[in-house]
Image (cartoon, rainbow, N blue to C red; front, top):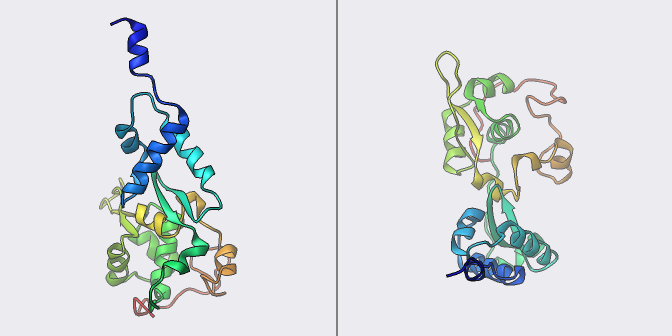
Amino acid sequence: MSREDLDTLFEAPPIAEQERMVEAILFATSEPLKATALAARLPHGCDVMHALASLQKRYQGRGVHLLRSGDEWAFRTAADLSFLMQKETVETRKLSRAAIETLAIIAYHQPVTRAEIEEIRGVSVSRGTIDLLMELEWIRLGRRRQTPGRPVTFTTTQAFLAHFGLETARDLPDLKELRAAGLLDNRPLPGTPDEREPVENDTDDMFE
């Protein structure tokens, strides 16, 4: 077989066809997929990132969006239409202030050790708070610090990014945006420029 025949045999399909293939795979899977996983299913020579970017642009303003969280991609219902998916009223419980503070410190200072979290908050962090955030799969253990005792660090997870609709941790909103969205009250969070008084204890219930 000649070189020309080989090139023809392994020639990638047109980008429009690549988009259709990626679209079909993502619609058929229940879990987000990495670009490498998509590439493994496509014909040789396909430009997966180009296809994903084109699809993402094409679905802007539609009922579903192609969202990227970290290095994973998935179709999700448009945020403003999520109410259509609800069949019944679900009672939601808010995280306690202690849990919110701990999660915020990890998100904005990661990787961070437990001692560093406690130094920022000015109070010890209860085991229950860490366990809760781990159970929600919003934080995970990171690399150990190369310091005496080699303490573990905490970082946010892919599930955290997906839950809050973030592509990367760099997309985290600032405090003003959080308060404007009603996600935080006007009391300052420890470790931030507008901190005024330290928190005295960590005896809040994990949920309010």
